[in-house]
Length: 123
Image (cartoon, rainbow, N blue to C red; front, top):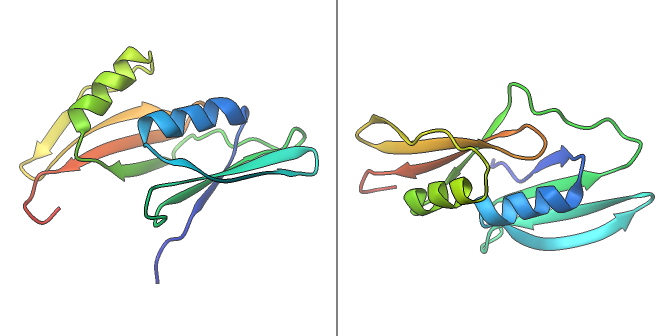
């Protein structure tokens, strides 16, 4: 068993796409109209990670409270600097143990996104 994708109802599709392209380096793998709305699938290069961003004008939007997504990166410092430059107000980088470092930033819908760097040899 494995986790295939996460779907989020978003307030603004373009802002959400820009955030995930910038902060998580996911890219659009598919995008299409669905009735009055639009759907964009964002995936990493190998396709094992995928987020479905759904914009439906009349649908209830996800508010992100009490929810977070974690992405692993080997460029934590550069991504933290990028989040600062983009005005995304990231948390400080935390180093809770010898095996990891991370920071949080909020997406345009209020989802807390953690970028984490594993420091152990077997990442």
